[in-house]
Length: 271
Length: 168
Image (cartoon, rainbow over all chains, first blue to last red):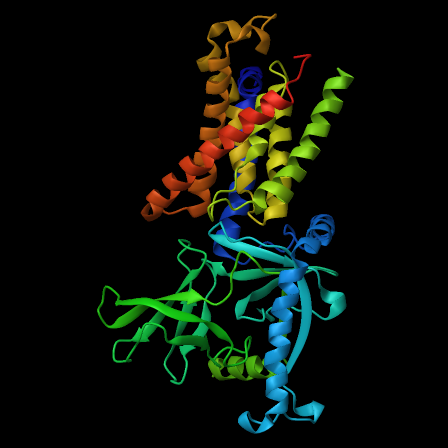
């Protein structure tokens, strides 16, 4: 017994190393295979507030650019307002509006690692819930992953775990939008069948298959495409509309019918 | 002794804030985010309780992980560097680092830079191989290790000459 204790004591550093290594490795494996950790993420009180203060200071430096972007969007929306016959009239009755929109500020951006998470300054108290879609004035950004009382983390489209239903504009051929961690301005659209005619420069938009994003939110344009190894499906490189390195204001979208759709789908799968 | 504890606590806090607020958002050339907090392992007192040093390093990595949503990647890298530091020190400074009166003052500049470079290399290799975690992306890993490693080395050398501790 004495010798065992002596042995442990003489290698105590190696044991400590092993012990801490096991703890951190298990956390890493968990975050690779499951969703982001519930307890340790940047939406928590301390981390959220530090990022909040820093974003508060640095946001002054980008005000001019951000203003221009918002003015451009207002201009587009005003055009829609003055020319209602060009678009389908919006429903006025509030009970028939399917999507809720909340605006928020990005307080932490990230695009250089393979699994990018962003942090925004709205949380449960402002009505943010898990699995809301996040967009900017230019296009799609990601999906809300974890929510604390005043902050939330967003799984960016630039995340190897991300997979978003997308389709080619003016057709119904859909695939899933993924990212290969190579270039932050290019995402990959998978599973488009070979028979679909493609042209470089075609617009890619969100499909209506998921209950996270409404149909028709712009994603990007086709940059390059080739067939995959089985020669039956296309691998398409999509140049994103969003400049992922320069984002400030975001909008969160909530589909009011999501619960109903999910319940129905769960019921159908059970049978 | 109290002075050392205070100094290292201050370094710990300042390095965490510098790393997460400045260098994690740098994105130089699109992907280079230098991991400057490695200099903590360079500055930490040479003669110290090894177990306490490892626990401190683990928490340094863990707090940076919390901020950057890369759970436990920084912790593993920091822990490994802390564990490997005596070996690297013996390699760089020879056996005489075990003597009582050994300090940074009686080492050459080349020795100190080699020491720093090896700390950074170990840290980068562990961090990026775990971050990407796939053999098929080996070129991406090497690209990131070398590009980020060189920028980190330059920044850390600058930091170490700017804030050189006089007492150690």
